[in-house]
Length: 102
Image (cartoon, rainbow, N blue to C red):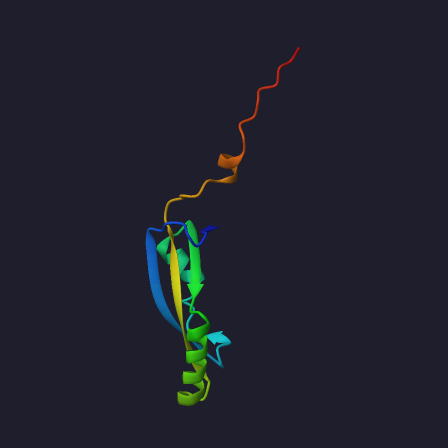
């Protein structure tokens, strides 16, 4: 599996809301974690983005006020391709010149 740059086009984009307990230290389920989503979607190239700073502040405030800080939500976006689109290292290397034996 290869990591995609932020500006690379993708064929699959999925958004999930995950929940963590113990003030965000542990996921409540494993099935909605990026690793498992990438495997389930059979992605060979992928990128994962988590909610930004504003979302983190909101989730922390909401979790502290409503749930005593114990359970915190987080948005997760998994994007990628099932077939390779990026050049490989072999594609990027210049062709080798045949050696001439004299």
